[in-house]
Image (cartoon, rainbow, N blue to C red):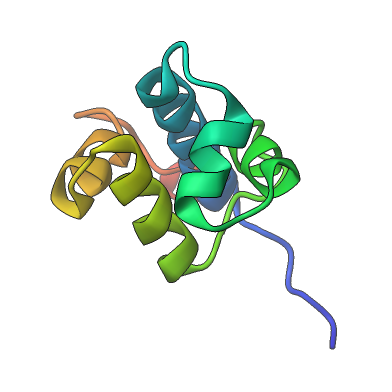
Length: 91
């Protein structure tokens, strides 16, 4: 199965998610949070660094729970900055 390339917006959203997860993790180790979410530390590392910019919903939900974040908070904090112009709209 061939994957379609990610759009710039999808890549940026993945980077925002990764930054948010790193910030929320604080001084806790990747191993601790990954274990709490039921995923591997390698998967968490890929998400945090943007190498896995579109993780599965249940993975994100498990990470939010392990980090003490609500899904609403996660979605709100990962939204583009107010006034951001989508790349596709720039001509």
